[in-house]
Picture 1 (tube, rainbow, N blue to C red):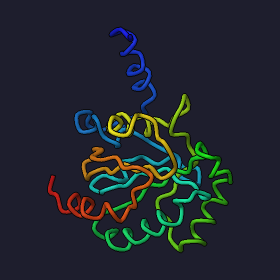
Picture 2: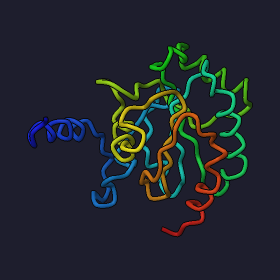
Picture 3: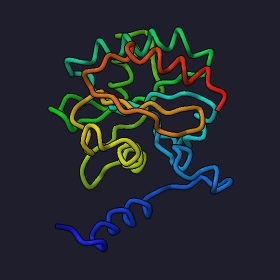
Length: 191
């Protein structure tokens, strides 16, 4: 059994890896706005870009059985709700079955040519283990208990509201179109 001190150490190490962008600390606390990530072109992007947007964060892979259904659903949701403030943030990850082995350039080419659509694409990351990206540590810490803390497979999903708070976590087997009602509710919310 772990004692109180051993439970605090992971929290201390988690928060020491957070990249802050500044701004009002009370506004930033517990939101995605504390983080940055490299986009698929290698440029550092603040998650501030999603302020006042509803965002679906997902770990993606090009050679997964869920690839086609998820990208097609992302494209459909984007077409319906982009103008209302909905975004998909896709993070390639090669940790599950080695199903995302290609370079970022090849991943981007695959998505563009296969789906004539590109979500917000980020550089390849790890979502589990000692090299977990700080943003994904945060996403998991906010909604980790219902599906276990670790990401089990490609296309796990986290839904974030317009205030940058993680409101739900979904399994890789959930089709993004099944989230449409919740996405609409969040887009229409005034808070």
